[in-house]
Image 1 (cartoon, helix red, strand yellow):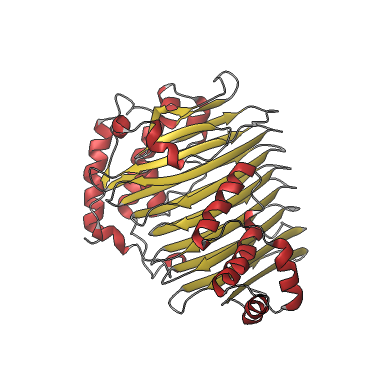
Image 2: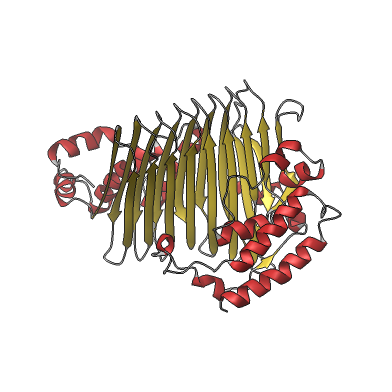
Length: 460
């Protein structure tokens, strides 16, 4: 299929989608859907001729007959089916979506709606939630991005969270997205909206899973609006099957004194593209992006970030690390823009990678676009193999080659994983990394302190 055929199929799906909206067609949100669909028709699918997709190929869209599912696909799923996907000992608010549709029977929301609104996008639309109507599609740019336009056109369900001012949500909000492909390939377009009032704090965990052997394509858009002095911990954990495809855009707008911490951990998935974007609307805000990816087989991950310092006196930090095994491939493209009036900006960006085979590949491109002069900005990227001197030092202490390799990779990974602030989630990710390395624990700090003293050249 070429681009025209794909858009014709989407046009047919959009007509079916509109016919199932149950009388919601006259609303403002549906007007935006229609505008996004008209925009999508005039946009081209990205190719490698597009600079931001130069190393990322979406030709797999031609290989699968993805269908938009908007029924009740969870009818055969129960708590036992999702138990393997839960996070051990995590005291959470759980929202489960199956093929993009909210499953009330599988979800567990602890907070009453009159205190904190945690509900599905679909429920919020049905009750005409004023802030949903006010903020929907006002930050994520569907005018210039094909996949954001497609998501906006098909936006039916997802997470809607509205936190009033002065509230600390102690229990994380765990949003679990399940693709049930047992009946065939699936395309879902979850749409999430988070509104956080002043001086409030929220923790969010997103996880992705596929049931069945057919391919699944999740096209996600999340909009986050942070008020004065809010604190937002955002964790995206991607450890899906080899038949999963994912493109996601997270758009964050920050007000004065707000802090946004994002951790993106990618362990598996056939194709993953993470777009993470922040714009500072007011001064004295801070954003921190931390990412870790450990890919093998022929899996692919692309982390594209953009931080817009539109005002003075804001701080941003990006720290991404990757391990690539077998024939896995990765892309890191981090861009920081410092606007002409954004004096006193601090912006740091770093990407480090280890290649375990000659077939593994990384394309890394950190960027700074600076139009102000009173700033502190830096960026850097390194790529290499495991340090031979460090390996030799461990082997000389009687440690096997496989264990020495695991020790070094554990240390490399832990620097990012330790930044995750939810202890139960952090431990769960450590277990996943340890399983990949066939070791029992990720903590080897005492041993490795000697390694680094003896082999200071290990700088990857």
